[in-house]
Length: 356
Image (cartoon, rainbow, N blue to C red; front, side):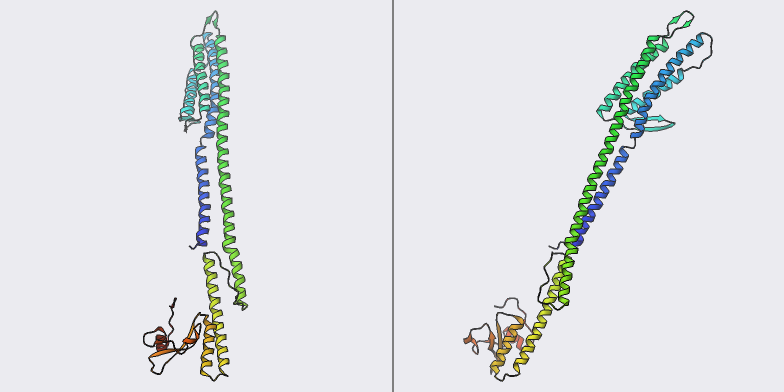
């Protein structure tokens, strides 16, 4: 079976392209899966700011009520408290379950949190958020009256402050978990890229070895063989090579060397025959020399020189090589039906792979 160099090199190139496509595809997938990481981390961190703002707005709202009771003028913080609470709750919901929220004047989409550890952390922060909501509204909706104005509910304010700090701590932990998860995804992509790089290096090394053993090294051997033939060395055979394109070239070159050597040998044998015939007068000696020359040229196991008898109906074995001596002058074949007769009558060679 021909193991084509083109096929092998095409396989190596195809594997490199496949590895490259996998690497690019993995990178694009990783970029897509991590596109929301920064936004998620920012919004998780924003919850800390919103919680601290709510605590501050509660204090400011109580101060506003105190000033209003004494006849002073102060802004109403209730609409801002409600808007901040709404934004905080929406972000919590979107962080946990996914969805759309308004962030910096634009609507953004968040993927749901699937990591069980981060979801549990969000659940703890949301539970504290509900408790904070109850404590803040309890302070705002039920301020105790005292003589001369309104006295802030110290215990309720302490609860609001404590819950605010707890939520901030829990969200700090959530942000850390989000950052760790994002870093783990980046590390995983880096590991995958390293695997692709290692696989690509192996394929390149394999391609280099394949090129060396199937192209560079055989060409060097073939160049040496061509140099020998060019220098006149027709005896040393061209080394056999792998069954590929270069192997075909080497086999063709060796076949050409053999034909050239055979042609030279034939010419030398014919020259020898002509030189030997100069001093021969006996017909039997001439025929014997011709049979010897035929054996030297064609190297057969059996040589027969046949001449027609007086009736010209048969061919008689007159000389040869490989025959028993008593057959000379006795063995004959029919001139009209035998292959020897065909060659004699038509003057054409008859090629048979297996002569019986």
